[in-house]
Length: 187
Ligand code: HEM
Ligand code: HEM
Image (cartoon, rainbow, N blue to C red; front, top):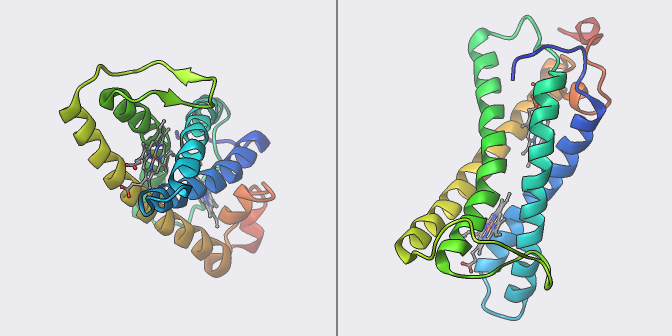
């Protein structure tokens, strides 16, 4: 995770924003889905499963690309504790993007439900039918979703702190991608 590079690879930046939109959509679809017993439930669940599986595929492409191409260094004047928290939070964000779809897939497998991606495409079960395991994973899916949401709010706040208050080029490294000349505008 710590390899240095002047800029985020353009594909990493595209994946960041695409996946940020998808993950937020998934959190809201998930909460909306469990809040209704009407016909919207079926539609939302039919959307939730494939979008979740696409997130899993994208993060499995993104992680090796990130490890291979590296990331720009954080500003030198950022205290070491803040650098540590930033890096640890990124690891947790990646872990959540892998864990949430896998838990969704595993819990449906343990519950004995077919894991439909589309009407025609059904994924194989990744766990044997086991109701106590289903109940545990169903609970884990909810708790990790809540923690994931809290982490995203903290991440968004940190990004805005960098972009609006410190103006140190960190936010720009994920938007236009120019991080190398950030020291020119650092305060
Ligand atoms: C990034 C990926 C995912 C996110 C952020 C996410 C988020 C959520 C959230 C917030 C809920 C509502 C939890 C609650 O309030 O109890 C939920 C429920 C659920 N999710 Fe996911 N999910 C993801 C991936 C998946 C995948 C890939 C599957 C299946 C293949 C899946 C299947 C389900 C099911 C079956 C429910 C519960 C429906 C019910 O009990 O009525 N999720 N998800
Ligand atoms: C669901 C929402 C989001 C997720 C899952 C997410 C995930 C991530 C991850 C995993 C990284 C680490 C990149 C790496 O080192 O490979 C990252 C970096 C970054 N994100 Fe997000 N992000 C989200 C939303 C946002 C939003 C809304 C903003 C801005 C308003 C933002 C701004 C940034 C910035 C500026 C960085 C670069 C930080 C650095 O240079 O260390 N992210 N994000």
